Amino acid sequence: MVTYMSAVQALGYGGLGVKDLDAWETFATQILGLQSAGRTEDGRLLLRMDEYAYRLALHRDDSDDIAYAGWEVADAQGLREVAERLRAIGVEVSAGSTEHAKLRGVTDLIRFSDPNGVACEAFYGLSIRFESPFQSPRPISGFVTGAQGVGHIVMLGAETEKSIRFY
Image 1 (cartoon, rainbow, N blue to C red):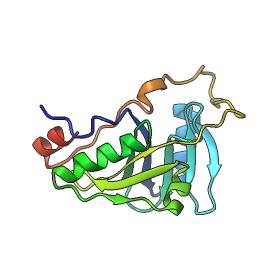
Image 2: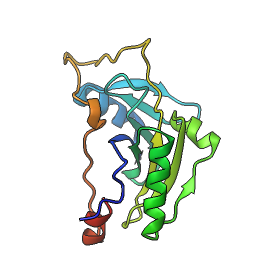
Image 3: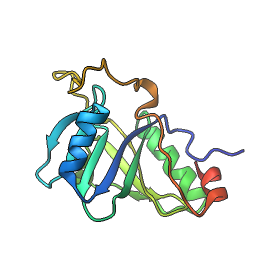
Image 4: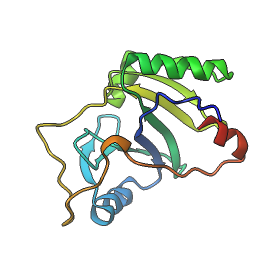
């Protein structure tokens, strides 16, 4: 099996479109134990599960679905490798703008879609909040993230075989 995104090290972040941002904030913090990192000027709610500035971004919209997935690579070379491999199999890849990288809190990123049309980004340099350690609002010691980042994501799609090959 050929792996096209082999430079990817982890699922670094995800974005969800949600109808009720307040209800999701309550669920994420009081049930799941994620820490709110606050709301941004554009209305996103950022959620933490470790030392990173955020791992989940919730956007107010009517989809109640995944908005994007952010795949972490080590550095600029890893980003180039992912872009080259994706282009080699016919996937359209675009460079992220400086503004988009700032919005995501990363050094640099590229954008593309998976076979089911899910927006994806590959990036490096996600912001870490050393000065503010993760602190769950629930009495838990934390989440196991480490080298795997968020850990995993489950997506349902019509293009199963293409998705298996892609990922």
